[in-house]
Length: 465
Image (cartoon, rainbow, N blue to C red; front, side, top):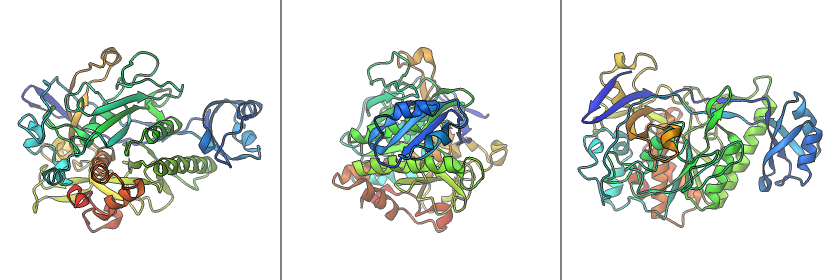
């Protein structure tokens, strides 16, 4: 891993891959035919050899645990049940970086000298989506519009994020929920396991003058949802059912946008587990449709598997029709955005195909192995944003050391798109969730290859025109 030092700040580059989901034999989704969970669901699951551990009553989804291999068959025998399948767990990509404390700066109306990393062009993705031109037109967002980042939590002690974090909560497979001002108990809304969510949040809405980077919508509100936990044989992961509860909560609170830099890819028709996958996808669609109907636009990462999504593969949650599915691009020839000189490439890891709606900067250092041998200063081709050094000790007091770091992946592309949607909805409060997504796609900058780039590069300037 190459390391570069800028002043008192050590910044390391790292490519985030491994966007994957894993099935657990003892965690099931029970999808009922009607949008309601029967009153006797607990006793029915017990009779089938399991126990109900959670439910989304109004969508007809129950979550069950069972050690019986035939539980799915026994439970599906209930005439009210549509199907029973896996509840997959998605892992956060592995990464490492170094951080350092940075003094807090006063908020500002536009980029200031304090925003040093942005000012020298290192935060090239924000420029590539033409956010500065939107700011020049007066569109920087406001706290009337909130982007919910469903991830590993946001470090609200970070000076670039502190002005904009309005709400924080956490959800685990045990059902714990903790409010913004409470950090005790089994579930902590502050990031103690990974800085993935903090990095995504910085791309969405790092504030002017707060620290050293700037987000797409520097005045947008942020809501932090920590849904990740340590799961045996998986690591730092989130169950889909836990994420669904967070999504529904964000929609119920009226938040305009959800960003999910997470997910996995599965294959239909691949023998064992096919029916179980269908159950999961059907439940995912029910949740997404309910969230969009409630007024929240969903934006998600398309995945880092380098797969063609035209065939048997589906990525979730991004590939669900109600969700904006965001692929990733890299920049050439230099890791700076220079109009008329710079050009985009599909990031080598980004999934592609007709399922991709739009693309945004995710970073691409050339190849997954030996990046530093392919390009000089390769880490600058990735995405620079806010990070934190998470640990249980400092996490208990929400005071972990903060800094800035490079990461690469569709996880980094998605928050660029979510930030643009936030600006669209802030400027047009009456716009529905679905119409905001349509505007994002309609105004994207066409890049030619629909299979590689979808409708094109998200464009804040064009979207607000």
